[in-house]
Length: 203
Length: 119
Image (cartoon, rainbow over all chains, first blue to last red; front, side, top):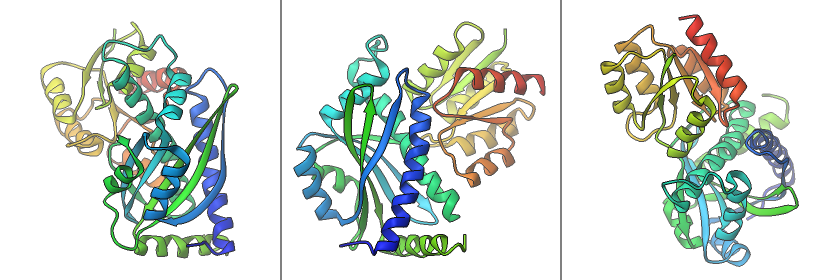
């Protein structure tokens, strides 16, 4: 499953814009500067996503999931290995914010806030540039292996996943994760049409 | 001292707002829309800080209900949603303003001041 070159270039540009927006927003959460980069963007099937995540991030994954409806239907997950998620949350909350509810709920809540911001920045950029309109669900924290994370989306037959590998550079730490945007085939066809119109200057 | 109601299902998000507002305001919290309405029916508030994405009654439904219950009570919507369409819908629904997540203290205080002054 591959993206034609023009579509790949345009989607990479749009996702770069969204991630740039997310980095700006995350910088205001942190005392230290954060750089967000997207080493790669590709289109995969749901079963391929399971193989990629299992190979690259292991069995213990932490994710923030938001479903979207409106112009298109699907879900977005910001996914980390549990170790990488912990590193990111440590950078954000430090030690002083570990309070009465306990570490796990604080970490999950913090990761949900980060996911909310990153996913809104990405999908909001797609919405504003491509004239789409999304309604989101409340961000949900999910833990488990890749099978669990994909199953939780409830992927319909013929779904496709736009997979953007992400790298958060905070201070001297490099934290790797992935953003997976799940589309129904009909939604992906609409995205293709919108991106082609954007590339052709019609939007 | 102004009395503010924070409405957000996220413990973390409420904690951030409380930390930013410090002791400068009297604060009440609600973790869902229905609890917010109960608070507003029982107490007098100067302003509401309202999250958009909440389970059950979402921010839009809560805003509509607040406006029906207390039309002059200013509501600032606190959201990470950057969609132009969402932001237009928020203002059309009667919000006094929008505060972007993650919340910057100066922006929050300026928005609160402006909303209460224009009440």
